[in-house]
Length: 302
Image (cartoon, rainbow, N blue to C red; front, side, top):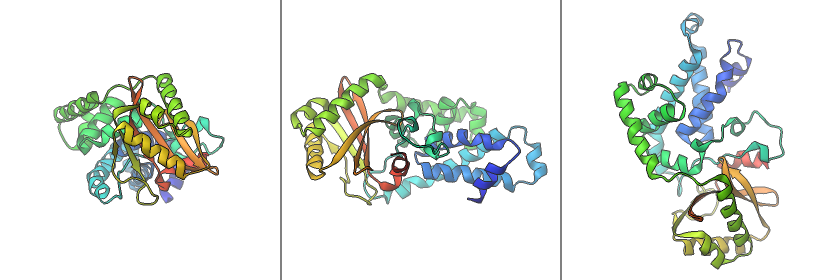
């Protein structure tokens, strides 16, 4: 963490770039820990430059973004193999909205996230389906508005090739339906919470699309299903079975990655963070993160 100390102590103005870099890295990687490592490495490379070389760089922020992008590209290239070794399904780290929690740690990584449509779980899952080059091109150009000339410098390809990569990624995003309004989703999530608490299978089935899918991420550290559960009826039965086995489980309506979701806690400890995708008044996807390592920001927040 020596680089972090150097960042905080720096007087050349680049410490202010950290929040932007963290936001870029998280959208590229879906992991808070990997994002922090990527940004730390970018700063380490900056401070490794001779002072004369640093003085020659007209835009340190652009330089750091380029380096962070290249580091993230390398991480994405190796991530697929690592996630194949992951126990069960891998999901992006869920993000709390610090405004909803009683705490004062404004420097935590999760607190530095801009919670917009580009960090919803549904969006991040689509990003996971892209090739590393598509993801970098799309996130940097379409989300952060970097010109293709700069993206090309990161990817080592021509601007025209990067434009094609972003277009390909855009087609994948279009297939994923636009999210409903936050208010509309909040209503559905509230009804799910009420039906879940009352162990009402029929009510849950009515709230879940017939072809709904539930994916859980325990990382092999806690018990959960290793494969997605398909079908509203099967999901409803599973949810009620969980409730029956976990007396004292408290469900809270909380923002998850910027949209309404549910947090399950027991004796004040966050056990599960659930994200939802909703269409036509029904839940189509549930993503439940139970891996304790991914819930650290929520443990601190709660």
